Length: 248
Image 1: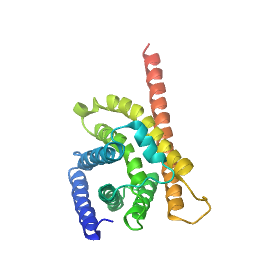
Image 2: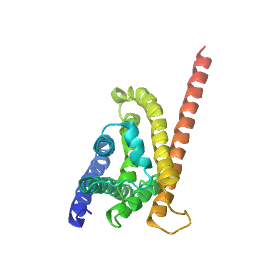
Image 3: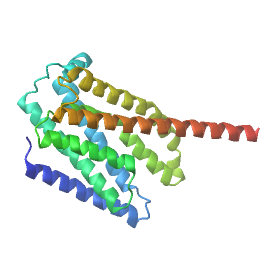
Image 4: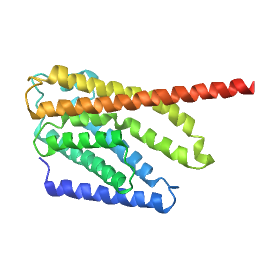
């Protein structure tokens, strides 16, 4: 279990950086999009760090070993060093989620699904950091953060000048390719956890079952985001076709 002092230092540090990046956005008329740059960089770090821990440390770089790690029943025993490293990663994930919630509340920029997503993530991470649950599935789900930097780039392109807007279409195409992979990975990890890894009744009031409920909640939110993305893309393509038809 990680030190509470260390967890507090990381959370306070990231929250401070997040606060000042948000202040720069507002002080400069939201022109710099500093908070998007911060989110893109840190989410990419989380994706790479979680992938290294899960795929290379635990699975020796093998997809088959990765499947066995996630679906092991009885539960896979993780070595002490890997547990410590996993718990530290969970601290970084928690700190990132916490600072994002704080900045959005302070800026009165509260999206219901977004806040529910982050709060559910933080509760799951507390189960790991405070109650000693395995960090395995929290880190596995965080691998899905590979799509977040692209979302941040799209938000920058939507608000910046013409020199940046030219990247909006390729970023949109990339996001439409990456988000289905995010959904597939999220659904796969949920299947591994609840259908294979689970060893007790879902009706029992246990820490594992709380984790299952949180994971299902996160899965529903991610599916809703993807459906929204599909609908927005389809609507944009229809509007473009109608515009071209009128020009002809």
